[in-house]
Length: 233
Image (cartoon, rainbow, N blue to C red):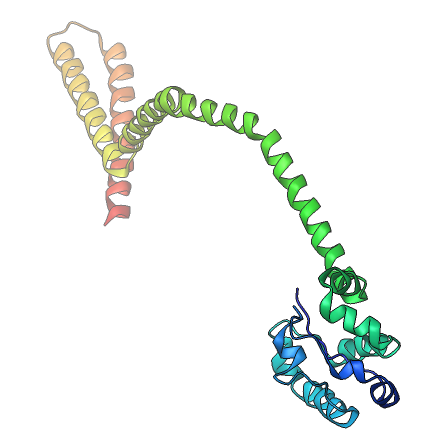
């Protein structure tokens, strides 16, 4: 972060010390602070400049300039400095950096920057420590995907086919077909039993008992078949 701020002393110091009026042209200080003229501004023009900066603070803050409150705090510290100290800040980069880094706002930002740097380094170390574990898990996923997953998919496909077969075998239409097949078989057995009775291969009590059982089962299934057909219409 780079802040620029005006440097000025009291009107008495400016009048008493003419050397303040001879600001070195070799100053490394930013031209926007020193100004286009080598002579410092008068107290009146300095106050006006400060007032102008304060009124323009919404625009300048977006470019990294201090807020009016921060600028007032900086100016308050500069007012207590002598002409020699102010000129040294203009000429000596190390002196300027020392003063700049002593500002509370700069210290706060430096602390925040250091904390963020520490947190970033810590996260980076933790990520590097987990790299080996991530590689192991990735290899395991590859093995599972190429072997176990393929076998599981085949098994799933087989189970789904079995499920479809079972669902088809127990569908209403399939159950009606089974009933019809069973009815036809019972009807055929009853006819065979009747033929045996006519040929006197079995006696009457045995014929009656078996024939009655076959026909009862047949008619029960016939009723179920009829009810099923009616419900599907």
